[in-house]
Length: 543
Image (cartoon, rainbow, N blue to C red):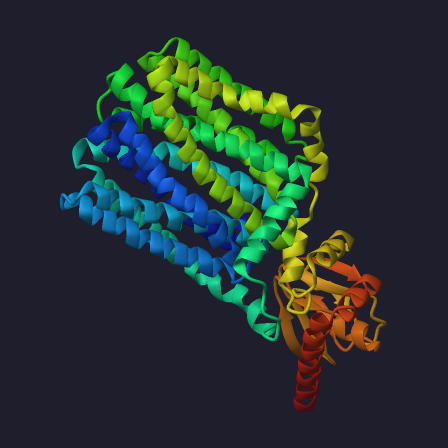
């Protein structure tokens, strides 16, 4: 399904470069810090990297609601590339440790732009609701493969040429990501330019507070964000525990932690066979529960009986469980979050992600020093199952609440005169849309007929003509049919499907009430109507 959408493919390939670099440099820094100061320094360095990112991430993510998300995505990749390249230069040149840690922290902060921007961008690129879910599933596969490849690659580089070259290779990966998303910037900027008279948006902090308020006020959102935060804490702890287990328990050498992380990544790759079931599925909570208990069981056994073969097998099981939990929870959160603040919600999640990783890394030295490595592994395994048990029966209500039509809302927001509408009105319109499939040559609107619907193209092409003279071609994100509805006149043109086309139709009454009831929307619509009538007059005169 994703293979038929070249723009979504670009985003996924770019995301792979990002995931590769995120996991690769994390392993490199952890090993570098552990070699220089043991578990304590590794935990402190993890916090130094992640806490600034956690504080800045939610603020940075507000930008995804203020400018085209493709632009923010591209800029984020460029900054990440520059910072990782600087770390590589310092490490290869034998520079001071504090400078390495400082630049690594800046790089981690820059990475917080990626997931919120991508989350805001994907619904604009998806043509059907099924494509959105499929994109989330593929994103999980993407991360899974990166979790396998990046630690293994980092392990090889660490064992041969050192941590500086890990950063150099990962900088090249994010540079490729920036090049992949660059062509996506222009189409989404069109919406912004055509409603240039919009009022100035509220401040960044105001936007952020609004997002936090919405999450705090909706039980399903609160629960999902909390569960993701707990998972992030467990993941941060496990990242450092694999280093401790590899070097202090199993005596696997410097590259051993990379290979154990690769086993975890292999499990995440295997989980792709299971996450494919999520496409079209409305019930994801059972998968969430199974994943949490799979995680707990695997780490319990690893803590009780650590061995080289056992560690590999059990970390594969933990990787499967992690990815199932991650994809299910993020898909539910994307379904449940209001469309106008979705990037802010995921920005908040990104900040919690960084805080969780930092907290997990900081708690490991404490657990290891007081309880020992085995007890620490068992304790980290228990946190997810215990969290789900504490949620109780309310957890099962999340599936019922997560029904927001995010793809349809994003499609309506791509129409310039509908984009200014408040989120509740857009959501109401999205729930009223009627999906229509048309074959080449099908007539959708006939010149002279009474106008009864407004149309938005989701996939394919539609040609407008008057008296047999071609006027314009509408493509994905374009709307037509508004002239007859807003001016109460017969259809001014005939619209015919040029290729296999999917459209969404909106009946006259909800369309007129929404547009005419909002000043900015009506002004933008009137400008477009005037332009199209002028084009019709010019084409008729030439014909």
